Length: 199
Ligand code: FE2
Image (cartoon, rainbow, N blue to C red; front, side):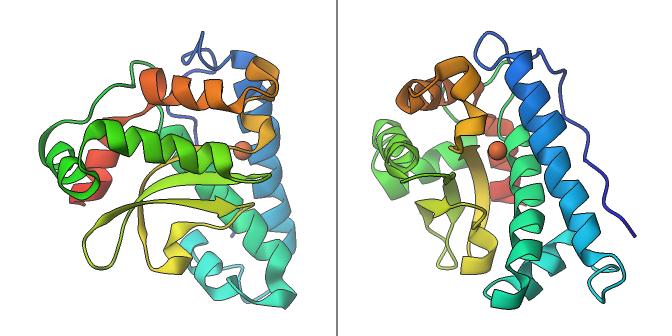
């Protein structure tokens, strides 16, 4: 059974002026689609063909003969998660239980944003910045390279932003820190993070 490109949760122009329709049309329509197409080609006729996306990611993680499958499967998952980590009227502070937990585990919302920004800005080359819930029940900021993702490190993802250049280069060129500031101030989807935290 082949995977489909999951629908974008908003229109291509819904994140403007922060992320342009042009960026989303390439990022979603070309890059995300390519990961789906590549994954389908790689698993066709193999015993991975009937597995769920998460199972494929877990089965192939760390297998050096399955690097291509892992990279494409993880990138399909990461991008879907990233689209939901943003909202047209996003940004600002979290509420409720997650807000309290952020204060408890990071000291303050300001300290959390400092660390979350630092993770993405200091990720060398392509990758992702994450807010995750650890097995011990603590929140943590992590960064991963290329397609790597929290679930294969025993952590639950709550939020992410993409720091591959294709995520921001058309709008921000080399100014990755400005893209990250914009994500934090105007795009971050706390409703999604709260759902992941509680679910
Ligand atoms: Fe991306």
